[in-house]
Length: 158
Image (cartoon, rainbow, N blue to C red; front, side, top):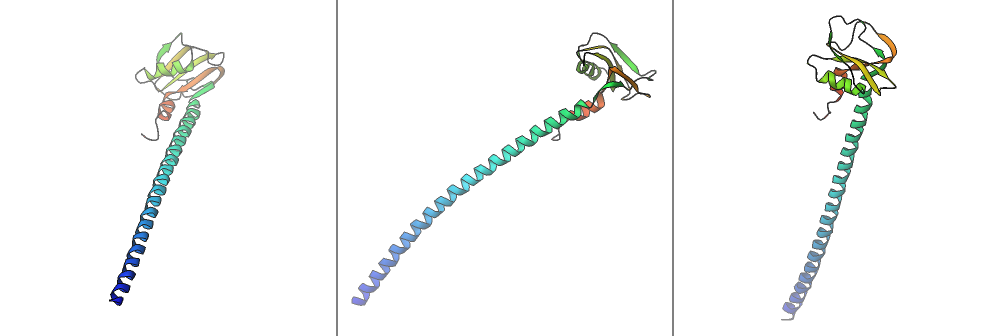
């Protein structure tokens, strides 16, 4: 009977150690799950910030590029016989000139006399060409390339 008691004690001790190890493994698993959750959350935050930064940078770059569609001091419509489709007066900016062109069927470009750095824009004309046959250099004129502006208004996501 002493062998049986010794064996039972040893088995009982092993069971207690096994229970203790099981509890420790469960605690470690809980810690790992918690760390994994924190890590996943931080990764999501980084992805969100990076995506937001990309979108912000894209908007800034598109804005800078679109400004090249307004060419101050140059009109590309000097020799555009038969391509003028609309004459507009009483506009306040080169952007209104662009809007008129966008709202006019067949318009691909516009030219305006701009005074005081675009504070007034009159008269303006809409054309069926993006560019004329000759360049007219005049500090008071602004060439507006509608196709350029419309193309750059698209998002990379589209």
